[in-house]
Image (spheres, rainbow, N blue to C red):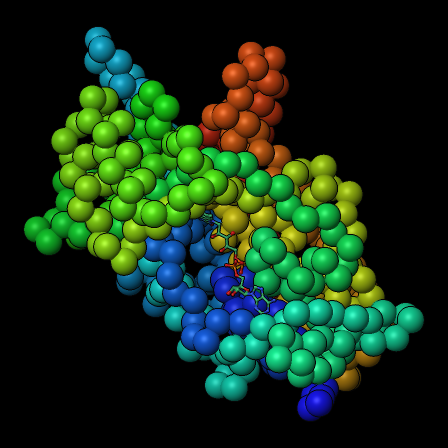
Amino acid sequence: MEEEVHGIVIVGGGICGLATALALHRKGIPSLVLEKSETLRTAGGSIGVHVNGWRVLEQLGIAPELRETADIVTEFHDVWPQEQGDKRVVVPVRGELRWLKRKDLIETMAKNIPSGAIRFGCHIAEIHPANPENHGAVLTTVEGSIIRAKALIGCDGSNSVVAKYLGLSPPRSTSRMLLRGVTRYPHGHPFGPHFLRLRCKGLFVGRSPMTDNLVSFFVAFWHPGADSTKDARAMKAFVLEKLKDQCSDEIIEMVRDPDPESLIVLTRIWYRPPWQVMFSSFRRGTATVAGDAMHVMGSYIGQGGSAALEDALVLARSLSRAAAGGRELREEKIGAAMGAYVRERRLRVVRLSLESFAMGTLLATKSLLTKLACFAIVTLLGTNSLGHTEYDCGRL
Ligand SMILES: Cc1cc2nc3c(=O)[nH]c(=O)nc-3n(C[C@H](O)[C@H](O)[C@H](O)COP(=O)(O)OP(=O)(O)OC[C@H]3O[C@@H](n4cnc5c(N)ncnc54)[C@H](O)[C@@H]3O)c2cc1C
């Protein structure tokens, strides 16, 4: 069976894997990204990137190009429909927030990575240590090919084979339904630069402008067949029925007429509980994880993607410090650099996981005591005023 040997190998070519490869490339360090899909995975509609994510995109050199693709969002409007008139709270956005097309983000990162540094159709099935010191790893693809890596970075999402190799517990999930889509307004939408968070009975609707003509939305809800259906059209019909008596026509029209290919339904929200993020060992020799593989956190505070970008920058900076002086990266130095990366990221990702966990629990629980505890956490951490977006992970 064929066997290859490489330096830094990144498993997963999503937001985190591509950002890590690009950040390493900017520091003059080559890497190889192994992606199981046959092409770039550009599906998934839109992603909100807050100022902490934009700081990273700036360091990666792709912020100006991406700014051209999406408008700025200036306020969150939290609305509770009530018979005697809606209750509305306006929260100003801190710094820059734009809703990007995931496709634009992924494609812009990929085109700035040297050709040949992303290998598609390469599905890693198993990983073993290369030696008893865990210096290096041996990766086996589903076809049985062997790839030896001096350093291994797992950016392979919530169901990560690298996380399994590190001995991490599998992430947990809740059975909440989420319908997402992007709706086109050929003559322009009337919503201004505002993100709407509408709390209806049994439904939570989010709506964000992307450009003058495009609006991204999601509806979170509970459905009795939560685990059995992924039929987006059936779920759309179910949601529209629920929205009929509670929401304005403009919300109903937005959910009724999205671009068909943008409509997706999720039946499970994956998350790593904050205590796991706090105490797990995210390094084994010269292997580590980043992005959702490290700290998948659901979509409650919209920070999974930006946190993955931060991970990429900090990891690449740490590895480049270890390589400073142009000497070849030795295994002990790689291990130490990965250790420094994990230490630097730990408290940041614990905070984000805790905020997301508390927000998710607040929406789902019926227990008054649990509600109070979660409310205390989000108040203390300033979740609703978006305090977490102020974080600056520094220069590359
Ligand atoms: C509904 C929803 C809404 C969200 N909204 C936001 C938002 O507004 N803002 C925000 O910042 N975040 C948001 N997030 C979170 C964000 O999408 C994720 O945190 C982010 O995509 C994580 O990127 P990643 O690269 O770590 O993982 P992924 O995007 O999951 O990428 C993992 C990649 O690894 C590949 N892969 C997996 N296993 C293997 C293998 N064994 N071998 C080879 N390749 C493999 C996969 O094909 C994939 O390409 C949202 C998430 C959800 C579910």
